[in-house]
Length: 140
Ligand code: UDP
Ligand code: MG
Image (cartoon, rainbow, N blue to C red):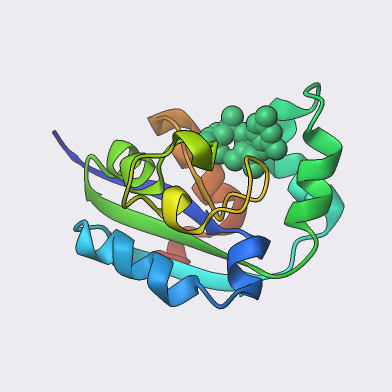
C-alpha cells in the first residue's frame, strides 16, 4: 500500500445536474483528498486527445462530443491506493453493473454519460494528471 495520486473528472452529465458536491462528498468520505481542482470546458479536440486510447472504438466520437458539451471538473485525488479506491467509489463503467452506493450506481445516466472518469493505473494516472495540471497546481 502506498499514497498515490489519480486523475478524476466530473463529467458534463454531472456538472449540468449540479452533482459536483455530492460526488466529491463520496470521494472525501472514502478518505480521498482533493489536492488540485479546476472547472474547465474542453474542446472536442482536447477531449479527443485525452481519450486517444479509445480512438478506434465505436463510441469515440460520441464520447468526445459529450465530454466537450458542457463544463467538467478536473481534479487530482490523493490517498492510500488512490487509483483503485477512486475506481471502487466510482463503480463499474456501465451503471447497470455498478455496485449499490457507488457514484455511477447513484448518478450515472448511461454507459456513456456516467458522471465520472478515473485513471486506471499508475502510468496513466501520471500522464492524465500532467495533461491538466502543472506541478505548481498540486497543492496537497
Ligand atoms: N464508453 C461508452 N461506451 C462503452 C464504453 C465506454 O460510451 O461501451 C465511455 C464511457 O463514458 C466510459 C469511457 O467511454 O467512461 C471510457 O471507457 P473505459 O472503458 O475506459 O471506462 P472507464 O475507465 O471510464 O470505466
Ligand atoms: Mg478508462
